[in-house]
Amino acid sequence: MSEIHGAVGSYVVNALDPSELDEFEAHLAACPTCAREVVEFCETAAELSLLATVTAPPPGVRTNILSAIKEVRPLPPELPAQPVVADPGESTPRRALPGSQVPSAPIPVDELALRRARRRTRVLTALVAAVMVVALGLGGVVYGLVQQRQSQIAQDTLETQLFSAPDVKVVNTASLNGGQVSFVASKSLNRAMFVATDLPEAGAGKRYQLWTIIGVPIADNQLDGGASTKQFFTGNVRDAAGLAVTIENAGPPPAQPTSEVLASAEI
Amino acid sequence: MARSARGHEDAFAELYDLTSSRIYAIVLRVLRSPDHAAEVTQEVYVEVWRQSARYSPDKGSVVGWMTTMAHRRAVDRVRSVSSETARDERYAHSGTVRDVDQVWDSVEQKIDVERVRKGMASLTTIQREALTLAYFGGYTQSQVAQLLKLPLGTVKTRIRDGLIGLRDALGVEA
Image 1 (cartoon, chains in turn orange, red):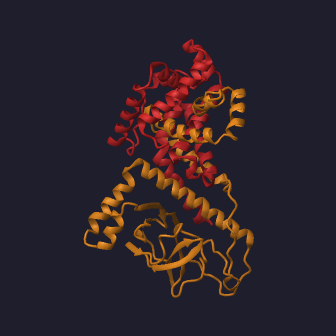
Image 2: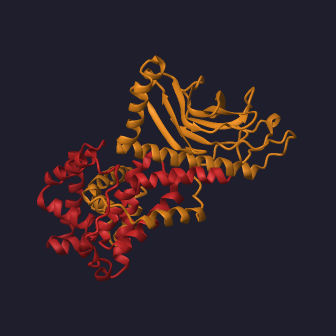
Image 3: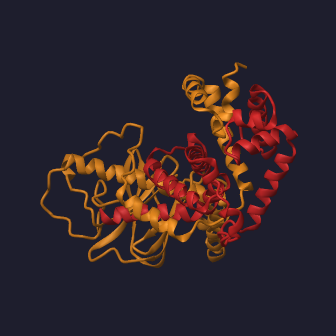
């Protein structure tokens, strides 16, 4: 092992002097073995951090952070954006406000706005995924939901199968219009369900529209708001990369979402 | 647009609620000053927000990624301010340990802490001391070498061996 390679531990615990740091980072960029070890050691160090006495930060910290992020734009992802899938026959603009009137006259698609909308969706997806992963890591939160659901649905075989599938993934998203929304999916069963509590009505002539994302959004089932609602997806969950929900006009679903994604999950 | 913004801000608030006790804990442990720790914790979360779309699972777990960022910023702060003033004594005298976040005040967490303690106990004394001084003390490997009166190369190896030993003891997937 070269001497520089041996600095990977010190690098992860931030114990390198500036000159050592420059040297190691130059090496790291060219050494996949070290890069892999860095990721592993970061996980180990994160576990080591558990020995620090758990302490809630002062309450002001939360307020400061939540107001600070309103002024900070998240950086765009490093990966290039997916190619635009625009159907010329469906040049409906993405509306910022779900439930608001969608003009009937076609409006030219604002490319920049589309890009912005997609970026927001990606940021949202990343954060929702992060919350889900953290929740899984913490153990209790998601498991609690599964347990609760399991007792309620003991009679329902399809649901029980889904919730007890070995690869079941439960994504609790942030509240949607005050309601709680979860996506539950099992690729091995090719089955997914949208679960919501206190979901407000979608609006006059509107319904909630589910989407499976297989490269592009594919319209799936629809549902209405309610105190406790659930709806299976009918699409190809096995090949889907994600699930999402928007508000659309009741009736035949559009070819692609015409309103902001309200909630989404990577599966 | 407002709703979209609210959408991910809600998700972010939830992420904060799930992780902040843990992130603040390590920052406070390194800095030993509640004032600095609060500031650094704010910096960390704003940075997490900024980078949120760039996180990917190949960077490790979300908690691992966030903890790494928090530790780095805490150590940077220790080094940027005079060590005497940064590690003020208020921490020792304050005695105000706030309520532990309920998610973390759980049996699972106590079990996790116990696992890490056992993992650390499985290391050699030098590995454990070197790792503790570097990680919790925020010392550079050169400072650790001086403190332990060991050659720099030895300290470097012991820190890495310590992490390997701890990783293996904790069964972190390779």
